Length: 209
Image (tube, rainbow, N blue to C red; front, side, top):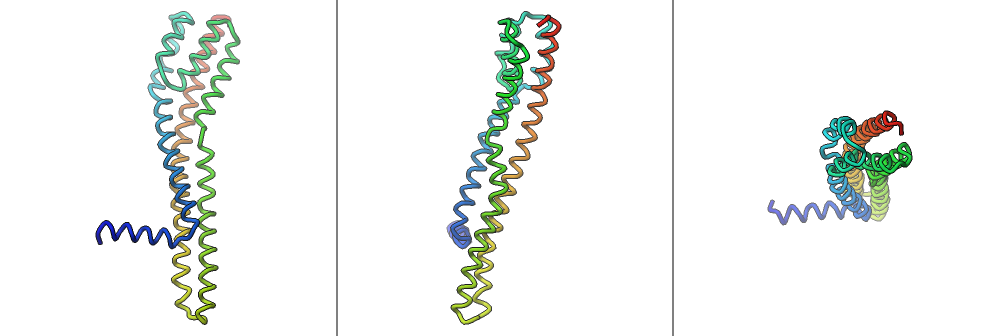
């Protein structure tokens, strides 16, 4: 079987799943787009994250707020963002706790972005597959009636109808794996951000802020 025949066979299988296959295709494309976008975002948010937080206590202990802010501004990760906001507030005499809480909330919201869409796809895809299967089976029974009760008339239709269920499960599994990996990555980054928050808060108390 050459490449052209393989492609045509895949297209035939896709079409046999019914109209719902187009919705499942859209779900799979959305999952792939979110996977790429979130992967790039988490890579940037977690870059040098542990090293930055490990060096943060010495940075704050040995430098002024302004100098510490300049050092933190050289990093481009989630913990550095929260640190910058807290250090800047301390340098300007503003409420340190409020600045840190606001920065943490902003970072957490950015880390959670689009994950709810993955959760929706995990739930929606099997339901779409089931809907396609039910619709296909209804059509099969109608054909069965039209062909005067011939048993073989229905088996092919049911087999094709089950394609939608299989496709829905495949999309759901794909989205579930992506969601789980990114949810764990988000939790890891938030844990490090909380550590940076605690370090800056402790230094603020030491300096009487």
